[in-house]
Image (cartoon, rainbow, N blue to C red):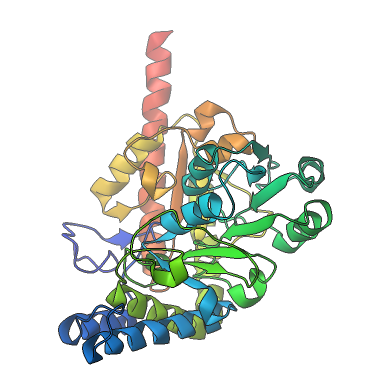
Length: 398
């Protein structure tokens, strides 16, 4: 079987359909050109003073200005990082003295936020969500007070694709915790939403290049004027003393090129992919009567199709899909291989058993109708087989 939409450069084997774009996807051609162009012709360290270093500094500054324009920040607010995890850690751990004030985080945040909050030395207040995956705004008001130093609520969930109402969250934060810094993890939002408007209310915004066609290992924490960030990496004092370390010039250029390309094509891609997502969901739920689509009545980004198959183990389902040539996941990419029940779903009120039966199918800009049809057939066949096996085992055990 010929590989068509798996990440470029990988050892693909018999991959037919790649539906794990939320974990990372192929680089956009513009990003490839920008990255390779620098790797093959540039090598200077932007921190130097000579002409080769100045060329590197100019390249970094151009990438900084491009990204700032595309997400609605000033160039001085763009802090280059190694990816979304470091950006989230910097936001949670660097936004004020570690032991000062409380931190409020939603129960469905990415582990990069939750783990950083738990290690911050602060009191951690967890904001619950409803069965729709959206935060409880009334509880948020109760959690907020002048002692809160940081609030972090993601814009788009990494598993379900549910979009939070950041404006409503920000209004409560400004009213009840006026001294708090408001951070949003926009890693999953960047491919699908215009952050200039969607994240305009946040003081700190995290993005990661490989989620929207840029290279792996390149990210940004964007900082509004007035928000103070202390470094969590110490050394040469790069990035206005907020993030030490030699710049990844190729990564920054590739990320800027990818973000520009995606921004220009976003509306067209989103409309097409949303239709494909619904087609995939309807085909699977129509073929597997027990399948449950997650948060279908909540606002979601177009690329996420999240399903549960009661009685079916996600690990077994993913194994069969991999054999069939379909790349998917059970949740966040950082947790792949562990196959623990999804904390996101359990926070939404799903039982631990059912949370272990979830499948995340995420589409990208190059996903086609034939990809969706192929994947739907494979999911239906695999889930039906596993469901039948489980029923047979139950009968034998009685």
